[in-house]
Length: 201
Image 1 (tube, helix red, strand yellow):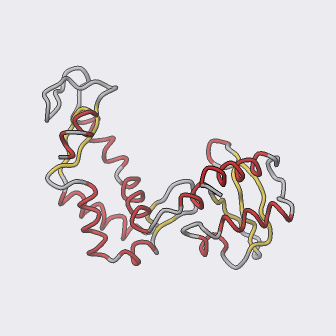
Image 2: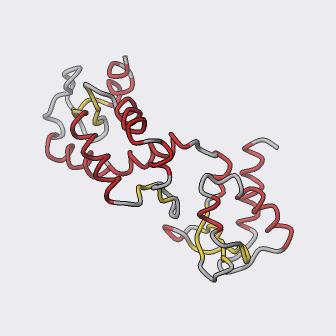
């Protein structure tokens, strides 16, 4: 079965239940088979699975939930099970999520739309075409060096997969990453086109 076929199957099962309903035995077996591919399956299942049900997740969307044998529960994304990201990509996502506010604040403090010029091309930056670029060291280069310095398993074990995104669990890891990021990367406002072409050379 292809990834797209698996996504369609899981989506069909999800949408065949109302919020609060438990999955029947067949659908539960199918979904647990998929859930075992989740990068944080051991964390998700905890002491064991009592049953699978459907309920509201963020933005009131429907999502699968695991009711554990100790009566705790947690949501689980079937899309993450199918895409099955490796440890490095999961850490990169957590890193990106960690600097979201930093990027937002840099743009707010350094860009006046329709006045500020792109640092690379000299074009006028607008609300629609502005992107924030890492330079001197790219984000990918920086985070790979940080991962090798800290240890991929040490960092991966500190990731929180419990929600719809991936984040660092501890402030210690989060602050260490932010310090390393801020020490080694500079930010500049450029056009999206420049960020995707010239800045990547």
